[in-house]
Structures are given as C-alpha cells and as structure tokens.
Length: 245
Image (cartoon, rainbow, N blue to C red; front, side, top):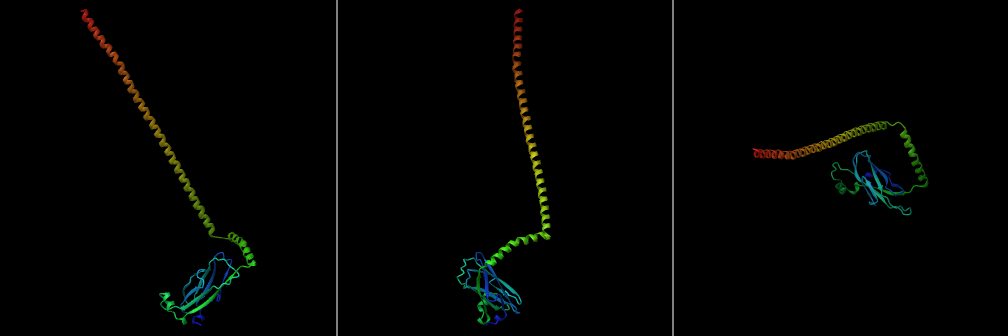
C-alpha cells in the first residue's frame, strides 16, 4: 500500500460506467479529491487510449480541492456478448515544493511514493423502461420550456424593445435612402432635359446661320445681273450719243 492511498478520494471509487447507446460520444466524470494539506500531482492512464479522450489527463490538485476528470468514450459497435477489458489507472504523488517540470517529477518518483488506483470500465445499455422514461421526459421538456417562457422573464422585453428600436432606425434609414435616390433621379432627369434643350437651341442656331448664308448668296447672285444691265446701258448710251453728235 502507498502512503497516498489513505488520503486520495476517488468518485466513483472502483468502476467507470458508460451508458449506451454507443452511437455517439458518451462522457463519464471522475472526481479526484485531495483532503490533505499538500499539493498532489495526478496522471490518468488507460489500457485503450484510442477509445477514450480524457480531459484533463494530468495536473495538480491543491489542498482540499477537487478536480473533475471527463472520460469520453468514442462511438463504437457495442456487442453485449463481448466482455470489456478496458481499465483506467490514476497515479498520484505528492508535489514537490518547487514544481517546474512535471515529466521530471514522474521520472524521478520512487515506487513507494506513488499511488495507483485502478478502475474498471462497465458498459450498460438502457432498458425498455429507461427508453420509455427518456421519451416521456423528452415530450415533457417542451411543456416545461413553454411554461418557463410564459413565466416572468426580464431580459426578453428589453431585447424585444431593442429589436423594435433597431427596426425603427433601419426603417428610417431606408426611407432616407429612398428619398435621396428619388432626388438623384429627379436631378438626373433635369440634367437630361437641359441637355436636350441645349441641343435643340444649338441646332436652331445652326439652321438660322445656314439660312442667312444662303440668302446672302442669293442676294449677291441677284445683284450681279442688274449691275451688268446698268453697265450695258451706260455703254449703249455713250455709243448712241457719239454717233448722233
């Protein structure tokens, strides 16, 4: 027997029970209590490390404190005829005054200073009564939840009021954005109208200038024959006067 065997308390002390079905992870808690006035180092080992996940699997327990170790069994195909040979062992040792390297503490530990507590793993399948009770409890759970919701709950109104306030803010923001979009659309329409008006004015100016040029050219062409008639009349008058005289 080790010196620690009289002071370390395990709960459960002998067996770790896992209740199926084992189609999902099944977790069992192991409590380690240190009622002494010294710190105790512990380490959890198993014969099937690939089938279990242990958190934490090592550490230090303060005087008078309790550490809960979660042992998680991974899903597997359970055979009731197969006897489980899985076991766990909890090793403990008094922690030195200056703990710096836990691996070195376990490496230098003497066999007389170690305590080994072994536990068996027991697999249990739920009976038919348990299944019925689970179904009834699952059915009654929504009713209980509904009754709890119907009861007084302070945070819900505040959360609902906060949601209403945020909703109102969002609605106001949407309205503001819509009005700005309408203003931008009106400005864009006004710019288009101004552009069309300016194009029409430019076209009318071009037509007027072209018309003036054509009229000038017509007037010039019309004045040319009259000028020739005047010149011809002058020459005819000159020659007639010369002959008469």
